Image 1 (cartoon, rainbow, N blue to C red):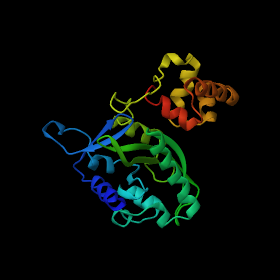
Image 2: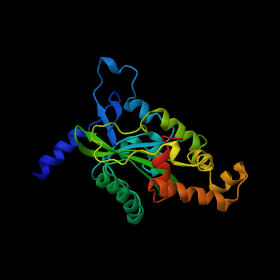
Image 3: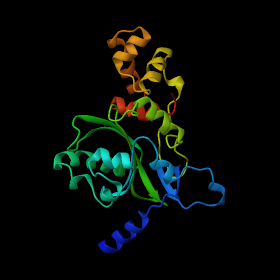
Image 4: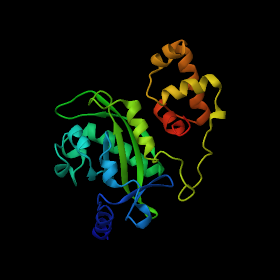
Length: 250
């Protein structure tokens, strides 16, 4: 039975550049193109994004990866990364932390945002902001489609610019009714005061609390107070969780 399941999973994980990429419910679905899909987002488009892009199966093994992610993680090339996991090249505790985040996506069955440490033999101390989506094949999760943005790693890595590029793919749009389950109502701008909105608009553009305070003429403590208020209003546990919940608004 285990072999049969893995054969099915491997078949579902076969990816071509021509597959259409769509937001479906709480995650992402990849489907064969049809006549009406001429201008829709494809895997080729996804892998060309100026950020780390990868598709993982339920064991966190790589099914597809772009060249930026292959270099950043230390695999060296896309070909060498396929069917591997970070545990093949990273120290166990480093790889285990990221793979635990992957499990969190499977368990929650929804897109999650993580702050993750990146490690390889060439670079140290890098931190990524990662968006990880459940990857569906029909009604079941077969893996993860992930996007990791690493400020200061490459000349084009402005976190604000990377977030704007990802937003243009429409993959950060609100979940459709399919698969949505018992989702809480999505917050709107009316959830927040005018000053909270001013702060949050800068927060989702990757500004730090100190930068927000300087730009708005507020104290650092006041900015943190507004952020804490916003977190309570939407039930966010961290700043990255707050960004996850409000990025479609601002």
